Amino acid sequence: MPTALVTGATHGLGRALAESLAARGWDLVVTARDASSVAETVSHLRDHGHDVVGLAGDVGDAVHRDEVAEAVTDLAGARGLDLLVHNASTLGPVPLRPLRDLTTDDLAAVLAVNVLAPHALTRSLLPSLEAAGGTVIAISSDAGVEHYETWGAYGASKAALDHLTLTLAAELPTVRAYAVDPGDMRTAMHQSAFPGEDISDRPLPEEVAVPGILALVGSRPASGRYRAADLVAVATTEVAS
Ligand SMILES: NC(=O)c1ccc[n+]([C@@H]2O[C@H](COP(=O)([O-])OP(=O)(O)OC[C@H]3O[C@@H](n4cnc5c(N)ncnc54)[C@H](OP(=O)(O)O)[C@@H]3O)[C@@H](O)[C@H]2O)c1
Image (cartoon, rainbow, N blue to C red; front, side):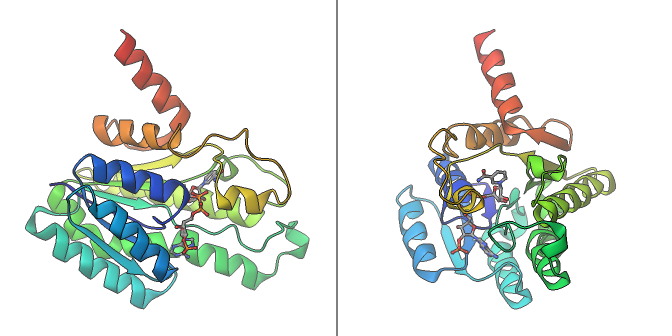
């Protein structure tokens, strides 16, 4: 069975993606900070009959990352890790604020979770990824390329994550690496960015983002930056023709 690690897999996009991978026969390592949510998620994912390991912790914590890397290496074995999804992420302080009100500590905390943690985890897992000729997916955002007021810390972190991901692709031809913009999604993170706003018009993660990522994993095009909506449109066109 192929093996995937999905960080931040108890809610939102990470949970929906983990469910879809489990249903397709993948063995999984899943993480998030809240231990009870991790236990509940693991229990559901195991209903699909494949191996699932859950680890509670913050991706910003080096000790937790070491535990995750060890669990992944154990589960994937000599075959290696097929898919690494850097999904866990922080907006930083909410309500979102202009740069003049963003402290250096605020910015450092966002970069620690959204940039330094994925880089460190990728480094630890490179031998396993290379053994499998695996795929790295960094969940990005349109905020990584657009310049929205108050989104500076988060946007800068996603731009940096994109850059590291695509540099990895340039350095390691045996590994595919993608930055994926999932588009707006009806999740807790999105609601916390728009407090009090009705976000019911945004699609659920399983409607666009997950099908887009599954299409990417299935077709493994050239490494690069992709939008989930575009991947879904291409997949739909190919099925129709
Ligand atoms: N929602 C959107 O509209 C949107 C748009 C563009 C990009 N994105 C990106 O999509 C990804 C998923 O976002 P989402 O909206 O699905 O978020 P979400 O619904 O808030 O879920 C976030 C998940 O990550 C976990 N998590 C958060 N911080 C973590 C940390 N430091 N360490 C480990 N796990 C952590 C959460 O569990 P715990 O709280 O228990 O840790 C939860 O399982 C993120 O990379 C986000 O930047 C989202």
